[in-house]
Length: 70
Image 1: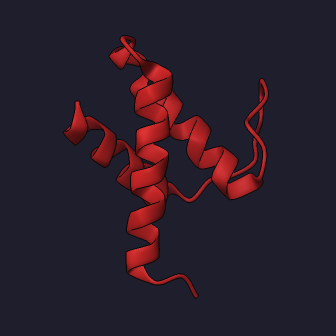
Image 2: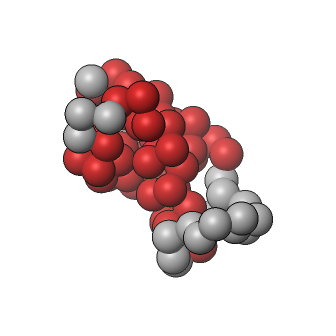
Image 3: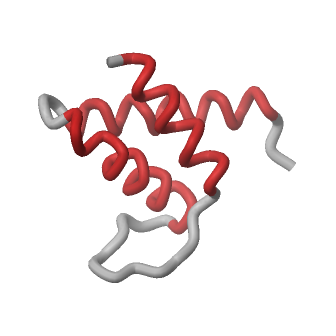
């Protein structure tokens, strides 16, 4: 089982990747957060019409952290 501290570190890392990828396109931050969460959960970046699930709680945490850092 993953500990809460590890989840926070993972979310922080994914949020920083999303911020870097979004650069000046902060209106797309949620998309980048989802993409990197998808990559973490499924091992690959999403492709068009990808229906594989992601951990919604992790995604929301990544998005919250990313928004707080902007």
